[in-house]
Length: 481
Image (cartoon, rainbow, N blue to C red; front, top):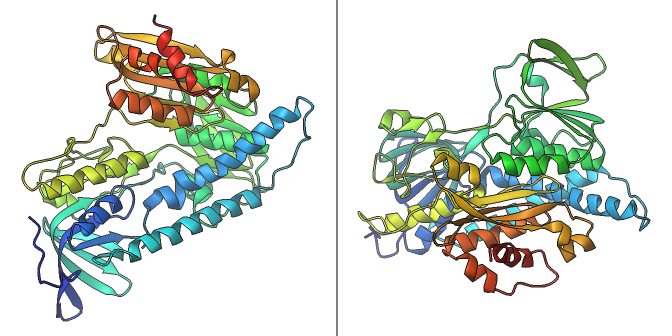
């Protein structure tokens, strides 16, 4: 049971001594993004005294500040332009030109609107507050917050570490000359003019998505990837279907090691790289570093005996750390670095805190829908053939090609397919992917079917809408019979 304190249940019981306020809270979250605020709201509404600490002083973390929301605001503008260009090439309404500064202004407006929405949500919960500042562990139950208005020491019954991740900038000569996703998508970003030629270092999902946006808007894009495959770690068959569908203005070079960046007198940037035994140089108008992200471990956490690896704080599906009262949710644990996965993990932590000594909830790290928001997109969930092969399992595959789909024909988007992967014996759905039309929407429906344990028979019997791409899910299942 939570200690409710006095009958009036104040947010915090404060004892003033010197320049530092000493407070007692039921839950402290380090961070106010997807791994933090769902638990904070759930606990506060259950009567707990809750404080969130965040360096930005706003809810929603990096997702809203420089990640999924602003990048998708840019992406959806590119989708509209791409559709118009497709129909324009067939003699329908003529070509329109893009105003990149206006695209950025739209992105900024979406961010501002959502920040205002979150502020209203926060103000509606009386026993929850958000502190802007830097947090430091003094011991497993005590955290000191250094903020603009002084220091505060918090004594915490439970802690959720949800400090997220940050852009990884490698120790590369001239790295300061490059942009990152932070520079592209944060509010009021420095880049408001479309570069004629963009060089992107890194072929992960951030690099490929950014390349798609710029190419659609009219830039020429070169991707330099060190691995033999872009989207390293994802199923090679899915990646092999996606790459040929990307914009022709995107050039992908794999097996490339970037050595240094240099500034030119013209304002351009030159990348020195090696490919095999050869060294070469490539000059563009902007360089974007998209090599990856790394977890942000709060100060003092390393002294607590937590299990901290290269990808973050190690936790199991109950999200508990080596200290049962400390949880690690979202990007900081490195399990599934996606906002919606962080939200689910945050709620798991809240449920387990409310459950006391016995965990009541567990996170599913495997069956989380993942979308690469390129144009077109690709998305997957659950067990795919490469993952199955790695653990010695065989799958039965159902397929539906978009070249026979009515919606795809209407929209002139007939490349790509739906693939569903079933357990051999029971035909229970274990995973799937979509490359092409509506991938970002269809993958959620596949994920629900995986989560619900549906079989190919269940999916084949469901009459999805016509003429929508979702009817392809039933057709993919029926391809087995």
